[in-house]
Image 1: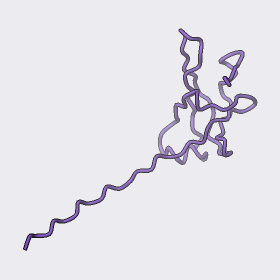
Image 2: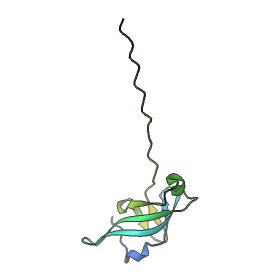
Image 3: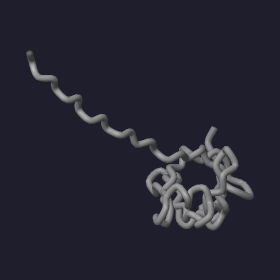
Image 4: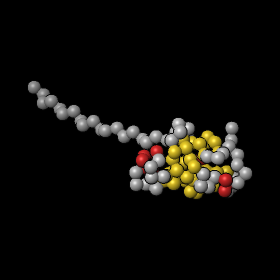
Length: 99
């Protein structure tokens, strides 16, 4: 089901939460596809003490693709965002000398 809004301006400065209840920040900007009259993504400015602010560190915000938006009302609800897991590369096994 598509999310419909009357005006793009309805999204600006709304609080953004994940579907697990974590506060992310506020919508700072909206990227639109003018040929199709659709919203492409939301630019969320991360609040310093928020879940997103802690995850991003010194970064200012995040671009959230519109398909990740679950609902728009008094707040904006997005699918849960998690930090990518970086696996450490295993050191190559030392070759045993042939006997």
